Image (cartoon, rainbow, N blue to C red; front, side):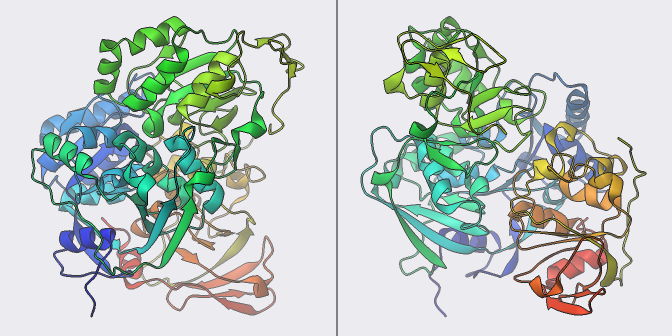
Length: 620
């Protein structure tokens, strides 16, 4: 049998103490670094305490308080303090509210290095693919298991190879690269793959640029985007980790499920339209769209190079009247370097608000949120409805965000006007440009509580019946399922009433749902965040199962580990399902029967691991 392996297979084989692994294998892998954030951290602690578990190796275990580093939300403050107290008692290191984003700290402090494995309650932990490491965002139950046992089960993913051919245009940033990829692939083409990035243009990417691209693997649906480490990045990691590193590279002749090529020479500066990171257009198509605010930061664009790009544009200029610019460096070290080299002074003279290091606009209750009707240009990685507030969010590069903040409308560095546009009427949405004419609004604008019940299925209940809800929609993300404004809720009994509270057309689901119901959905259900609440809210309502065409990778793990039944299908059209039909589902055989018309269809039955965890009542 051939032993040629891809990068992901090499990393997993080494950490599973095996000579070889192949796609589909389920292995227990050693986790080198185990991180819980202030979001999810309290639930990790409660899972450990509730199950009588202890931390196996405190030196490999960390808290990172990056979601709300201001402590401005009382519930976040409460959860942070709970984690601090636990950390003191178990000798676990805390990177507290002054430190910055956990995944960036893991790279810059040398906690993670090429070939290493790490998990975090951060759905963008796969950002570590930027240095050729295996990082995964996971729910609080998975993370608690990693803290207690040092290992986790993992299904070896299929590998894909993407090569960027040609010469990169000078005006195409790293953010533009990944937005062009999203435009080409959407959220499903790479779903469930470990993707390796190759090509001359890839080899020339700096560490900061690789981080930007890798940070949006989750939005692309990929398990991870892995970059073979360059000699410069290997030296960077060796210096910070104090280790001699042999980076993992794919073997010659390694087998890939798919190999794709993209012409990077055809890439253009892009923006993602409000609502979806993969709804992308060239920036030219939305130029002159009036904005109210801009945000530069997040794990995608909060690095030193991003700060310098913004500073170059803002130097000697001011933010347009009526526009708010918010800038948040990714880590305290980057913040301090910006202070030392005068970058912070440039930001302040331009009229920007500079926040302390952290996730900023991606987390509720923190710098970067926008209000109803507010149009924002953001360098973040997500613009799902409600993710960064109640306004509209365009995703763009730091250069476009900074230029737009100065102009008062979406533009590029080469078309910043001498005088900014000014707001003249909030009602009409029109602004008075500097000889450029009228700038119009964007064309892309867009009761009763029930008693919560926790539904527990008996050990032998592998066949269930229930009323069905058919949601004919793809890409239902975790913000639509359980909005980030409720992330601090740790009691499962409270979660049910918020289920689908941010999904248009289904916001009253919690009032209509009954114990024993079953949900049918489309592709990529549960994409987005690592939040366990997006699974537990269904359990709180008594929903028996969710059946979808495909699931986000983190959501799939969270559901399996929580013993919440999920199944996938290819085609169930013959069932002619309608809301209210009663169906019978066999988890072991993988069948669905519509009792109304006595039709049947095949779906994916439980794997051995899923059935074992299900019968046990959960991973812990």
